[in-house]
Image (cartoon, rainbow, N blue to C red; front, side, top):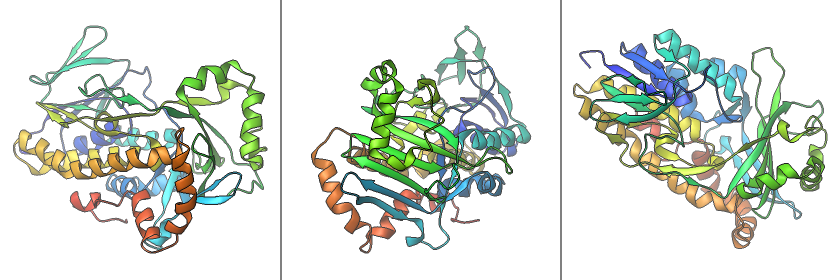
Amino acid sequence: MAEPLNIGIAGAGIGGLAAAAFLAREGHRVTVLDQFETAGPVGSGLILQETGLTILNELGLRMQAEKLGAPIRRLYGLSKPSDRIVLDVKYGSLRPALMGVSIQRPALFRLVHEAALGAGARIVAATRITAANPRDATLLDDGGGMHGPFDLVVDALGVRSVLAASPSRELPYGALWATLPWPDASGFHADALEQRYEAASRMAGVMPSGSLAEDGHRTVTYFWSIRGDQHDAWRAAPLTHWRDAALALWPETDRLLAPLRTHLDLTFARYRHRTQWPAVSGRIVHLGDSWHAASPQLGQGANMALLDAFALARAIGRKADLRDALADYAGMRASHVRLFQLMSFLFTPVYQSDSRVLPLIRDWLAAPVSRIWPGPQVLAAMVSGGLGAPLWRLGLRPGR
């Protein structure tokens, strides 16, 4: 655009900070407001797919992310007690060099946080946003303070955003998770996300998650599926009850779980679903989970937020009128958002629900589908985020 914009971003998550970095780099005046005293990440390890890695490359961060993360070339899961393969996705089925990168959320946060500051964005901490006015693009905090007016407000507050009109729907299942030291002679694959299932109501996952520093100790993220309404009962029972169940499902995790001594060593994550339409309201635009939250079963959350951040900056950069730019942003992302919201809705109950029928169908169909053309290619495209050609729509190509 001809004149720099004054942009307020509510939320210093991955998407908000990436948007701040892109927009400030283009010369816009960017202020990021976040409720934490010191901005920081919330959540477990995640997989950067080719979509997210390509966006990080545009920020000059891909190589750093790959050094801090761990390569993921396969997603692999067995149903117990049959040991039937019910998840087998090989990235290389689509393209030999294709892979994901598993990374600790604090490591990714540090990269985009430094990029935002380096580009000139201003970050205001200890400011909890409670409301916004889409007409004059002002933000109100919980102390009664007003911020703005801005030319544009970006809602990057996440799944519980108070600026989104559409309420989020809490999903029945969430997960307990912990980041643990990678055990020597572990027996786990260093380049795979592995899972074990009992029907769809019990699941454990092990994922290498890199390190916080390039010369740091390697880590692994452990997940345990749990119903949200069972979390209080889990906390009230001795931890040994859960540990016995976890080892009954996956005995090989015994050494891995040894450091978990109290309930506080595991963090409970609730999963929610929300699609906010329209993505633009006046001079407020939604980004990431404030627009399209979903279960993390498909591993797309951070990647979708990064795609949104780049799309917003690209649209503002190539349209002279702000309304045209925001319409361009929504147009670039809408079909991909709809596609992955639909796939999340369809696939999540297959691996995380109380259904008795869906796991049976999964157990008998998953292995053949993962081996017969075009099943392997479609699964790899879905997991890597490539279905719907989101990078092409942004004028980007996969790869470096």
